[in-house]
Length: 315
Image 1 (cartoon, rainbow, N blue to C red):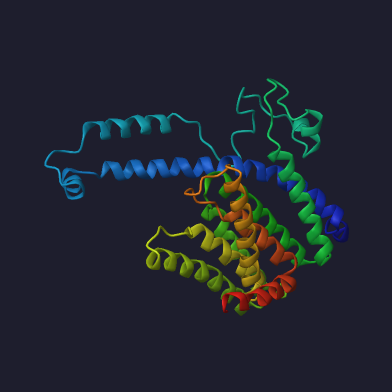
Image 2 (cartoon, helix red, strand yellow):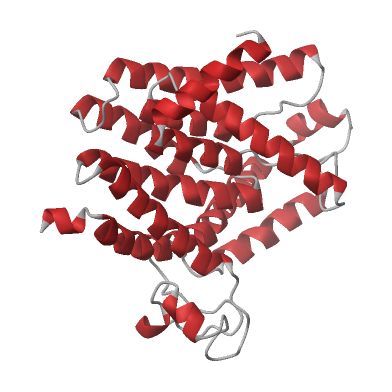
């Protein structure tokens, strides 16, 4: 029975189901984070007394009344929102509020049967939903094909389930939530310590440090030497740390090179086509996810890729 569940077919079906839940994560997790950010900002505004106002702005008057009024209005609006978690409320059409029935929530199939539209109001359902479900199913099956019926296959599937929503959330919101990046680091370290992957614990810990450190160093150089805003967000650093914890330090260079090449090609193409403004940062998470997936599935090949490219940059 275990062999059937851990077969490409079994894990592929599981991936389709997990992919359906990942759609909820991609849709709701940013909203949950944004709400918390607004509440945090409101708490900061509440601490804006006359002394801090004068220290910041050099003014002699009190903080403007509009600031307090706006803060109170935002607080009332936040307090009036229904609670939102990954589990509640039940999934529904954002346009008409129609609750999604079980038969309307079958991965990929329901989207095809409904022709990509809400059954109640006819609002179009984005292609992202079936594509994420299908991609998760395919990658879960690929993990089973690559590693067989093993703990390493399950660890790789868990990595897929974390990397895919990171890529989509960062692509849309330029946000890499700690609730996804930190579990990726923990997954790699625990898997190495438990012997679920061939990566030794020391290599996993070194990979996490190298993954975080190399992007931190690049961002610091960019900021200090070139006097420009930090090119790397902390979420990117944590994400690469998680990839390093999963694969060990050896494939880090290859995964990073691959991500950088993909990001550069896509970025230049979008700018050339007028689809992206040159001064607007391009999220790096989607390309790190692709490099990370390649490193998880083919660590030796990606490690060799990094070694072959390292002389080009003097490493």
